[in-house]
Image (cartoon, rainbow, N blue to C red; front, side, top):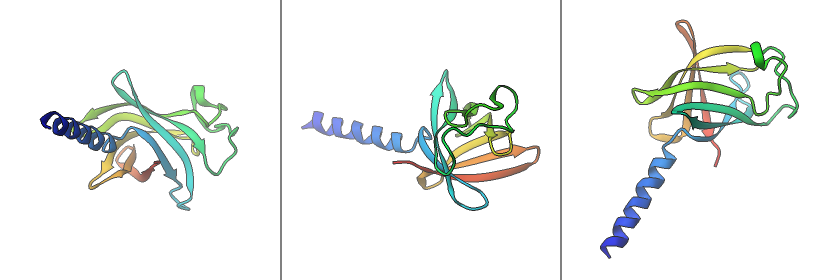
Length: 140
């Protein structure tokens, strides 16, 4: 009986920890129209957080990033890595960058789960002292 309770407790802790993680697939929305735009998969590699577009919801799957700088210019937006080099500091992922394929610009970035809602990801991009915040929804 004691082993069963310990096992159930361990499973519960694992499930709660997993649902409160930023890792997984998130649905993005357009800031201006509130229309669903894409799915972004957030994953960890070499201790840093990355995110790539895994599904386009309102555009053709073969859309190219015409405005993107450098090696991403004229590359497919689908499967493009748009979140790079994020590190966990002070309870949030930060010190990395996010690409806005629509504008072709990189921004400094911080992300964290919305307080009290593990299914909403707060994504904040910075350009100097100015910032823009988006709220992404977990895809279940």
